[in-house]
Image (cartoon, rainbow, N blue to C red; front, side, top):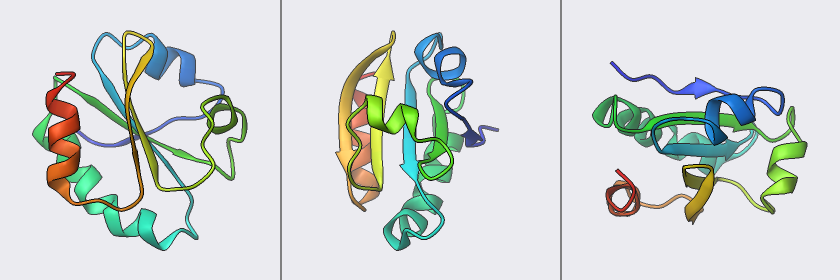
Length: 107
């Protein structure tokens, strides 16, 4: 059963860039209400795409380097990364169908 994994600036390269499956990374912060609103959807996606998609979260307050590197200026901000390249970006609290549509292009 797939679970959302926390990543940091220090293990981002290993867990995301070098992943052998596409990765959905959720840039979030505990104080962000829209981030908390989409958290259950992100958890569902991790379970539904287990084995086909790695789902990770990064707290932007604790890890400033990676969000800066990817131009993350507002959260929630989710990137779909495949083979180390950004394939799609989803900004804001959007319906689950929006995520499914984006994920279907990379898995």
